[in-house]
Length: 137
Image 1 (spheres, one colour):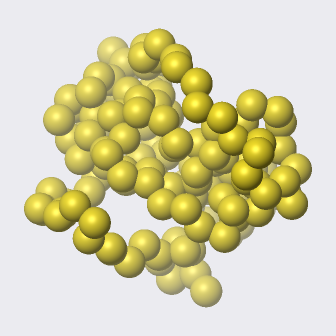
Image 2: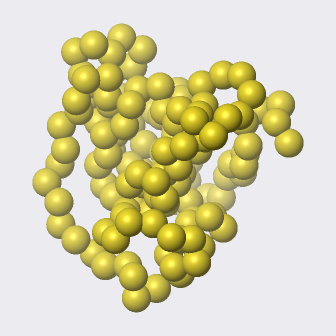
Image 3: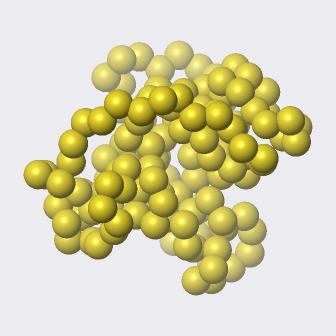
């Protein structure tokens, strides 16, 4: 894990079509461990973790689907919005192709987030997270 280091960054501002999300939970999965161990190549300085959940802090002016305070959860392939998987819509893998969720605040395209039903999640509670889109093996 010598590839990982803690750094301080300024809070980002959402650009067009983006949400600013305060990350409240993220998970470490097999893909993330392969990246952290250097067994799956990625750019130097890549921020790991492909899954995250939190609350919307701000939205860009052109986003109508979300508002500040909404609870959201990430999608693994943010470009796969519908239909069959293709190399194009399975690109942009978080924590690999682009920076992931191992940070306090993150700006992501609004379509890469899903509304999360608000319920009380207790500290250290483990919740199941689907590894693939609904209806896909």
